Image (cartoon, rainbow, N blue to C red; front, side):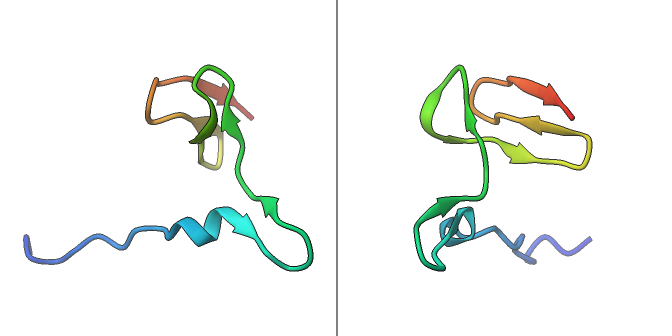
Length: 56
């Protein structure tokens, strides 16, 4: 296992669509409020801050 290999992270600019108007691509967490995006998995949306999960 190669421990020196860095994990590719998603850039903050990928959370927004800037063609024309500014549009958010991800949902905000209803518990944490605006500013905390939820991770988008194939079967759920999950907040890494508080642990809130919504099934799709």
